[in-house]
Length: 122
Ligand SMILES: [Zn+2]
Ligand SMILES: [Zn+2]
Image 1 (cartoon, rainbow, N blue to C red):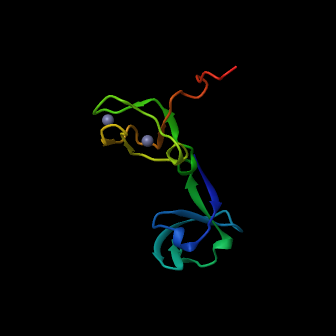
Image 2: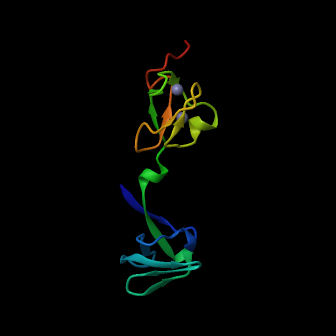
Image 3: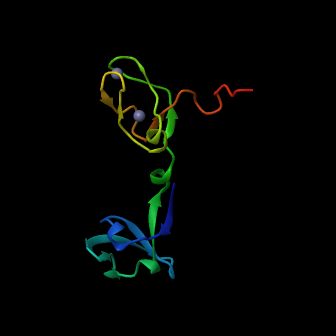
């Protein structure tokens, strides 16, 4: 799913981003970025970030997917703790053998129990 969000800074734009002016429905494709200014098709100069929105994929802001993860090298459980439990990451490093691997394309987090299956203390 995609939606327009407010553009924070011109330097956040990349070639190929789809942007639209807050005052108009027309969407523009960014064809060039040069520091503080970007060019979108129809030679639209983008210089005031407060006037623009950028089309972002919701995937970027999604929380990591909770997964039961085992190290493919040594077979030990991989459970993300502390900051790694909060921080979305693609690659995981085994705490037992040091192996680094990517269990899925999306960001994942190794959990002890999948959501809804945790034994809550009574
Ligand atoms: Zn391992
Ligand atoms: Zn991890």
